[in-house]
Length: 209
Image (cartoon, rainbow, N blue to C red):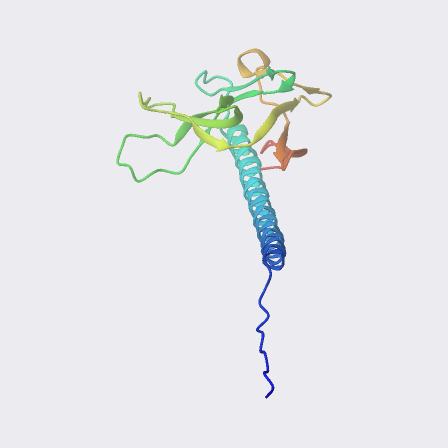
């Protein structure tokens, strides 16, 4: 009489530990790749948003300056254009103020459409922000407040061309006229890199408006 012995071979503890370790490594690699791609998409989205802010800001200042130059009358002291040369820890942080026009709003308040616009660099949450404040020249409002025009900005430089050279300061009360052209240079931080962008804004008289 023969006896047949059947043995079911299972996994040893060492084999199970090796499988768990390999699974953990594979899972970490998959999650690492996923979050890397996610961070790259977020950085790309932030970069696109920063460029949109930059483009709209430069375009807005250019249009406001063209309108200001068409509106300016040296005999009316309420119409101002001032550029102050300032710096923030060695980086340009110009102050820009000008009288220009704006379309009427739908807020139902008294407004002339003639506004004084001010651009300033301010620090907020350890970041530099370019703010914009507008105030009606003829109907002053006590609740006029500045709002962020552009974030993640490192420097803001406004230069004025007087017909022969570029200068960093201007005041119509002293110069008696507006500059023939503005040069706005903005430095932004994109993913740890400082990138510089510039735009030229001619006066309306320079372009024959």
